[in-house]
Image 1 (cartoon, helix red, strand yellow):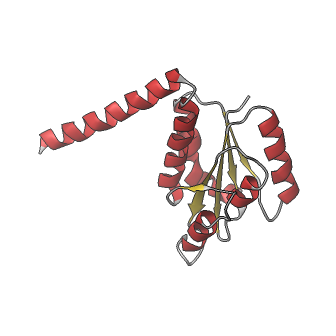
Image 2 (image 1 turned 45 degrees about the vertical axis):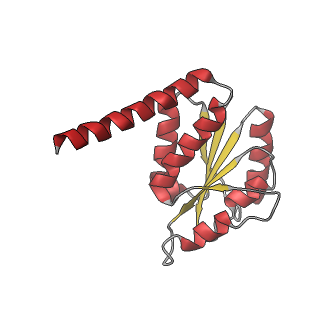
Length: 160
């Protein structure tokens, strides 16, 4: 039973979103990583949201470029948290996707992360933090990772 569902608008987004799946795997979070398009497969997207929610999914992560309507389409179909990762896929450098993801109408929020791989990683961290509200083991893994981040900065500072 996946706790997190990662949707990408296109298979070409896999390289940018793979860090999200890898981090969830590292944290032991059961998840699904798949392609579904708000424009090319709207019925599939709606059906998958309904099926995964019925199976217990708690958080949806949606990554898309260009018009980037995927996160909004998912938010329209669920009351579970939706995390949006805008992807740079056009001459606009991702600004189009960022604005499409962040500008949601009231009542259908999408928590919007950074562009591309950084956003993918932070979407995984945020999804894990949401799940950790009711999972002390997962909260401990997040705290341990943060301890490691702190130690690496202190070690780097000491090496100067």
